[in-house]
Image (cartoon, rainbow, N blue to C red; front, side):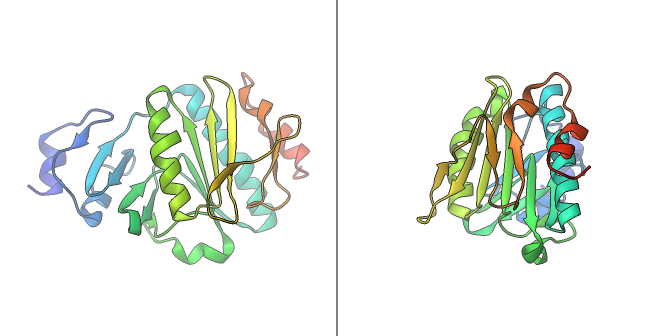
Length: 211
C-alpha cells in the first residue's frame, strides 16, 4: 500500500503508529504539511497536538530566540512540524523548536534539516514525558546536539542540558533561575518568564537588550 493510499483510507489517532514501514521519502510525503508525526526506524508515529500552555511557551521561545538570532545574525530557528533527520540513528524527529547556527545552515533543505541541530527545545506534555526525557534525551545526546532544553510546564521545571567534553549531557547550572546559553552567545532565559499566565515577549527582549 502506498503512502497516498494510507492517508486516503485511514485516519490515524494521536500517538498511534502507522502499521506500514515507510521510507524517509514516504514519511516526508505522509499526511498534510501540518501533520505532527515522527519517523522512528521506518515507523511513523502520529503525535498529539500541543495544549494551550504548550503552544504559548513554544510561541514565546520562537519569538524571543528568533528576534535574538536575527539581531545578531546567528542562524535560523524552526518550530514543529519540521523534521530533523538523524540518519545514523534512523530517526526523523520533529522537536518543538530547534536552532541551526549560521555555520551549519548548509544542512537546511527545502523540506527538512539533514542532520542534528545545535539546540533543541522540547516542551513536555503529560503524554510525552518518557519520549522527551528518555528516548529523545538519548538520541539527541548521541547525535551531538550541543544543548537540549527540557521544559515541563506542569511541574514548572526547566532543565538545560549541555554536552560535556565526553559528549554526554549534563544539566547546566542556573543562578536565581537564570540560564545562560553557550550555543546562543550572550543569550539568557529566566525560568519565571515561562510560568507567567501571559508570556511577555517585549519584557524578555528588553532584558536581552534587543529593544
